[in-house]
Length: 293
Ligand code: SIN
Image (cartoon, rainbow, N blue to C red; front, side, top):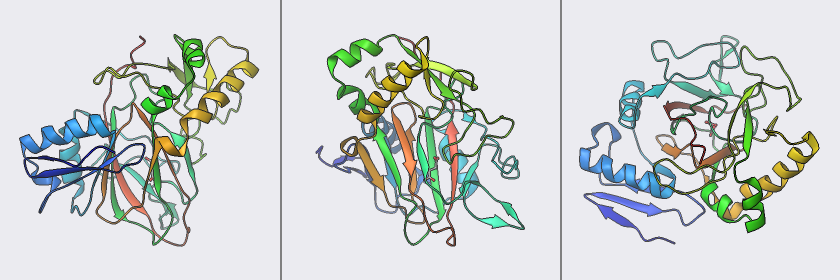
């Protein structure tokens, strides 16, 4: 396990799991972060893939302003209910099971959310996502993060050689909760479902490290292979990706902010009691085309 690092007043404490570190400092408030602290945080984010900062008190404007320090923001996807955005904040995606006046205020309900990379059905998927907890249930709803550098590193050499240069279709039909995205038609044939192709084992544009880039399992398809062969190869790759030794599990507290590198991680969420309330606000930082080499 990597040791705790101190930069300026910041302590960066690795989780000791497959990914992640907690960042803390006395009275650390992300809406007052200094330039030097931000540089240390950015470096730690590239090194640890997922960062946790506890005890924050952020308004939506604070969350957006902090997120903008990483780059321009993507607009949030339309929610399953057809509800577009948080009024006045098109950058905010609401993850919630809460229903108000008969209408869900957010996405993904209270069920399990399957392993995925956010919005990888876009030509330019977000480079980062930032999730801030406003209300959390007393139990359940933990979020797991998986380190896709480690997943790639754990593949047998022959499998790495086999997938070199291959491209994978990332499905645009279903979200991670299994709901059909607004404007999509339910299609369960990976050959014909809507989506975009990305390299299966790209190099991270900032760290130069190679990773496995799977996006999500449902309706995934490896370009040019017979469907049965694509399915078998994907099952084999997934058996390496979603291993506990590559992962870190986060148990949420109110005021937690979790920031992940959306290029070299996947995440999933446990289900929780639908009678309890869970509300998190998420931003997405614009990314680039996934590099082909
Ligand atoms: C997400 O996939 O962005 C949401 C994860 C969660 O609900 O914890």
